[in-house]
Amino acid sequence: MQSNESTGQNPQLIATCWTSAGDAAPLGPTECSPLAISERIAAVAETGWAGIGLVHDDLLVVRDSIGYEELGRQIKAAGIGIVEVEFINGWWSTGAERKAADKVQAELFEAATLLGARHIKVGAGNAGEPLPISLMTGAFSDLADQAADVGIRLALEATPFSNLRTTAEAIQVVTASDSPSAGLMIDIWHTAKSGLSHEELWNITPMDRVFAVEIDDGFHKTDGTLFEDTINNRAYCGRGDFDPATFIKLALEAGYLGPWGVEIISREHRSTPLREGLQRAFDTAVASFPG
Image (cartoon, rainbow, N blue to C red):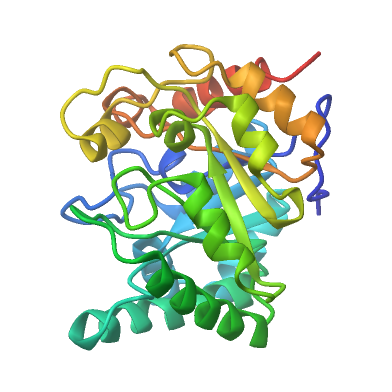
């Protein structure tokens, strides 16, 4: 198994779920990849990645077909040492929405446990008007306590169209919990789109709470809504406006040693053959690290 630690010269890169999913996208008719899981694992391994990410819909297909034991065996046999799963949402909700969210949470907890996942990604929904921060803080503390009970780490991601629109809000929510499972996911696309400079980001972020970091690139001009832009127009590292090289340099200087998710979600990437897209995503990410 490969180490979960990175250096600037030896970054451990995770092909996040959408980077290897082919023609599938968040909140599409289905989030399940049309590609066989064995094909994805082989392609991820052959193009140099240290980790693989899988989304809830993909995991259910695996659970009900080959099972998690066989999936874990295939991942390990391919030499892939890091697994991430996603996406817990709705943890603040009530009623029928909460019942559905709790079911997904339980299924992701099961998958993460059986696969030895490094962390589960946690979102804050899509919201026209965000909920009070006090509500989100209490609900996340409860979620983190549940995760700690079963030894799972949570990486909470702020997105500029959600109930947590800024990194500062996510930091407030995470640091209100004393659970060892309460951590942050920092994604360059979301921090850049919220107007936060790379320098300010790494100055305000408590590094002991950063469980995961994601890199990609994008454009200051938004095409459609922010959500449409994030699922259709992300760019490979170094091919947009966000300067991932500086983002990475400052993260390393701030002390980040974990793996780096590469999250390429775009029409271009979805239409690119699997291995070609994975290799392009990997090579452009590696080129953004200091030599």
